[in-house]
Length: 123
Image (cartoon, rainbow, N blue to C red):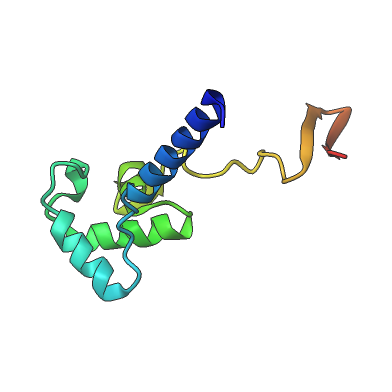
């Protein structure tokens, strides 16, 4: 076995071992777990000020985040309460103008003469 192959094998093994040691997300899977998680982090300095001491608000935020496909901590960082309503930041919510899967480009024309919309699929 030459040195390059041996080095590549070692690097691969190290990468595999490091990946196996990485922590996984602490995402609650039941209502009881979500309630306990909300209580535990309600007084953390890592959650935004508007959620501190409010495990009920955190629980609603976690649920809304789950519906948007966000991890619990991502939800807490990107969902705010505005006038008593949870609101996701613009960067969090997918745009209705985003491209559908398999689309290579999207063209939108808004001139009154040609109000058209179209997409081109890859392939």
